[in-house]
Length: 221
Image 1: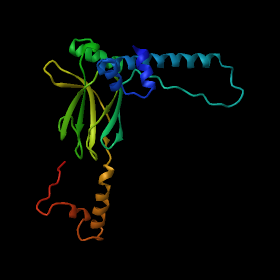
Image 2: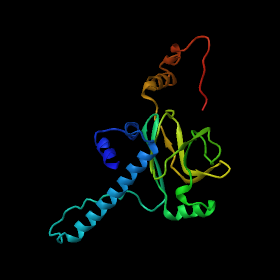
Image 3: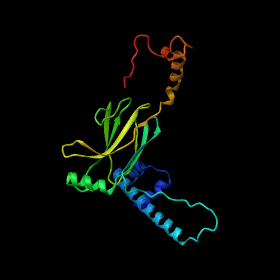
Image 4: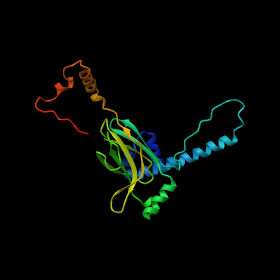
């Protein structure tokens, strides 16, 4: 199965497309693919270590290219902007933290449901419960990265990775850095018009003429 997945990935297919072609769930394909990448990363690390041991002592200055391991045993959750409407998130949960969560829930880590929670914290001091809005995503076991899509431009987001409690509440294990999606380029003309108005170069913002004379609605954050 993994050989077919690898071949299709090399052809540029997404995991969703591969799952549809193989008539499998997306979670199963992601599990196989992440496991393959993890094993490939370990093999590469061992090869690099062996090359360093067998190499002759350097007679002149030269550089060594290090390969980042697939995953460190540490607690990391980092979010990066991909577009005005999407964010890429990757994380690593240490074995120690996994054991703490296992002890808290009296359940093996692999049996706990994995969830991601996205908070819109634009222009507020986020305290964990006062977001403008939030939503959750179920993430498959053995997943350590995700593309969050269909977000709003020009907003600030914080992402949690965690699990579900027995009463259905979200339980945070890791929290990301705040990340701000940029403005949509299609709306950039309006920014320039507003600046002309503020600087006294226009009586009214130029974009006002595009709105109905009957009413004007402003989206409140």
